[in-house]
Image 1 (cartoon, one colour):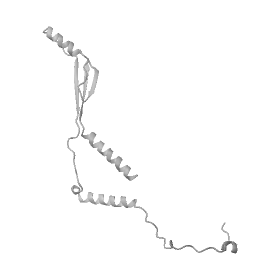
Image 2 (cartoon, rainbow, N blue to C red; image 1 turned 90 degrees about the horizontal axis):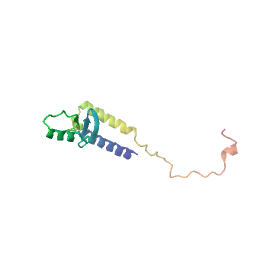
Image 3 (cartoon, rainbow, N blue to C red; image 1 turned 90 degrees about the vertical axis):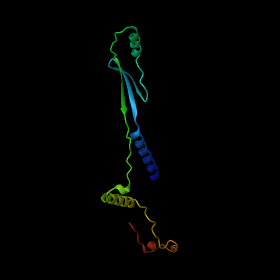
Image 4 (spheres, rainbow, N blue to C red; image 1 turned 120 degrees about the vertical axis):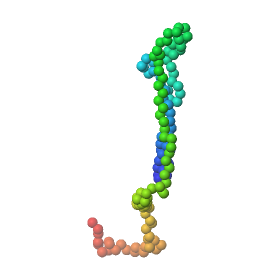
Length: 139
């Protein structure tokens, strides 16, 4: 049970480290103020209005303002991980951790086998039931 808990905790901690250091982008394409498409890790699909306006630009010299816009959000992960050891802690912190560790793990110490001094000796044979002979009964 304890090994299973340790394995689950280590997997969860590894996933926390991976997801806290991972960075990704969110690309969104808006056309006229409405969201047309959103994409993670790649460029968002367009609505096709850019192609129509590019063709118009070639034919006439007057250009119209583009109604479409692309928005890119970059979510950066943590770049540096801090490794700290037991030696970098102050003396009070080291004392607290050592005391906590000692008291916590001694709390769950296994019980020792009780020493039975007469386990190798057999009990005497009962020849007669003494309680019945003396008529002593427990109620």
